[in-house]
Amino acid sequence: MKDQERILQYLNGSLSAKEKEEFMKTEDYQFIDQVTQSLQAFKAPTLNTEEALTTLKNRQSKQAKAVEFSLWNNAWKVAASIVIVAAALWFLYPKSSTEQFVASHEQQTEWILPDASKVVLNKHSELSYSEEEWEKSRNLQLTGEAYFEVEKGSQFTVTTTSGIVTVLGTRFTVNSRENYYEVTCYEGTVAVTTTDPKNKDTKTILAKGEQVRWVNDRVQRNTVRAVHPSWESGFSDFEEVPFYFVIKEFERQYDVTVEYPESEAERLFTGSFHNEDFNSALKAITIPLSLEFQTKGNSVTLSK
Amino acid sequence: MPKYFILKMSKENSDNVCEEKVFDQLFRSFSEELHKVLYYKYGADNDPLDIVQEAFSTLWDNCAKVTLEKARGYLYTIANNKMLNVISRRKTVLNYASQYNGSVTSNQTPQYVLESKEFDHKLKTVLESLTEDQRVTLMMNRVEGKRHKEIAEILGISTKAVEKRIYKALSIIEEQLGKKI
Image (cartoon, rainbow over all chains, first blue to last red):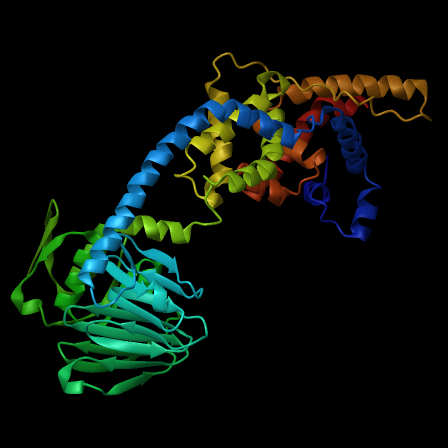
């Protein structure tokens, strides 16, 4: 065989008609053609897929029964749990007779709402809505941080302890943590109302790429170039954010406790850290502020 | 705990491998392809169909742990491991397909018929002496008509590696047989 490139193109069926015609005049072609014809003799027997599937099922039927049985047992447990939770909710919220679905998980979780809107919950965040009232008003309660892609429709409201965000159809994130409230709009327009007494009833309108943030009651407005929140792709991103808040996010992401010098708490931090790589994340938050770190089990100590 | 359960329920309705419908669909989509790969790799005497059944059986047992996207790769890994774990693995033998009557058509000279029969026979020996990887790539291309990229996807290797293997296999065949044609 001579022309390797040509041969491989021919084998892959990627020669043009003209190139193929040329190639068919060569010795390479004659050889490959003969081998190809002869190779057909060794073709694998055709599998009767349906028959094979039936055989597989028969073989598994005994096992399957055992599995079904244990599922049945668990189904009772799950059903019982749901009843207990529903009952608890009913007692906890005696004024509303509605059931609530609550999502909370130690990991980022994606959730599709009944109207096909998408929610991504960051770690240690909870979201709930009333299933009964959903049809009438799309109303969600959020603790923590979440990213939303809202399908067009009636008014969509996200309520947190720090404020309320209302939209019609757009993509945005709400981050509501202790003494920190941040809303970023990635598409469309959102209206933000804060519960902060000083700014009460002021409506902030955010357009695409705009962000508003209340840190300890101070208002800050930024522009954002990203089209998705950074944490959704595995990073925590900060722009001029007090260091104590960066530490809090770090603690949430890695489930550790961090001690650091008081004097650093209010320093402003700009940068990001990785959410899956502990060591590089630790460096990312300490090097910019010239801090040293020591780790011991689940606790981290930062020092000057 | 129940909270998490509800969340999972709402998320996994159509891509849960534990659902019989989804599992059957997987079997219909991939069993034949897996069977071919195993057949060309390990030959007819190592019960490729049995291994296919076992691989799917294992997938079913672990359906909760395997996502739909990962299922195909999972099947190949399991099947290969099972094959390698068979202690008394037999030498790879490729049988002539039963409906096959040689690369002969009616209007060929007796000499040609004789020569090509001899060629086929020698080819069988060479084919069985190739490495598993060379053989499966060659057969998937020349007999099953798969493009390099498809083969790369099925075997989880690069397109370059596929090309290398096919070319190497053809070179060996040429070296052993080519000059005598």
